[in-house]
Image (cartoon, rainbow, N blue to C red; front, side, top):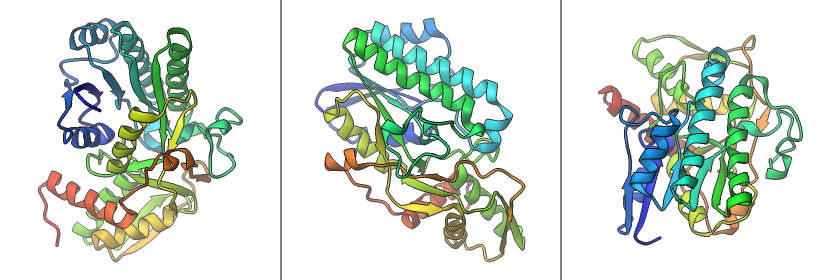
Length: 312
């Protein structure tokens, strides 16, 4: 990838900031970023004007409204509207600006709740999604189909990437909006600081997820932008199944919380299992480098720096 201008939409978010770290090290790549206050991605005319002026070679749509079960359940309208608008504006605007290469992110929640494991792209739309994710999932499906439709009608080379559960530096630790790993770090840290004897977590703890360190996802994106041209979406996963209960134990160990963990089974679990089949990306020479414990330690250290605290 030489003398390439890449616009990263959502450059301050979890995935976007990792992409900035990764591509920022490439000597022949020029990164384009713009703040949310300067460009509202839900406004079509503004997005089209920006892209027509910036003229990037590649657009990476790493923006969107994201969150865990609680946020998805509380704000379904915002989740479907904002994600629909941002995806549509970026994809259509990129095409109008003559951008031939775009990378759009899907989500593992697009797979059916009772999908066979590990999940392959051909399993998409073969069953109902987990109900708590439906508004978000519908919006993300629209993004996938937009890319496929523009490729088919206009000959663009827009790429859909479906990552597993992404975590790492750049996480949002707002308990109402964050994902499970960040929520646990925030909860266990608070419990340790306040000398609490117990932390209560949602669900049974028995559901299985595959946690992918965000910098590993960024390295996969470079490989895919350079060499993946098939029409179907491609999975990127760590292939390291972990129960939420084991994740909680790992987070507690990293933080040094020695109290009890109680599981509130009256709260929803989500899909019982989400493991992505990442065979295709692995065939291209990619493999994850950061294990869960190392990744959680890096995420916790980033959390401490962000909060102005120090590790003991």
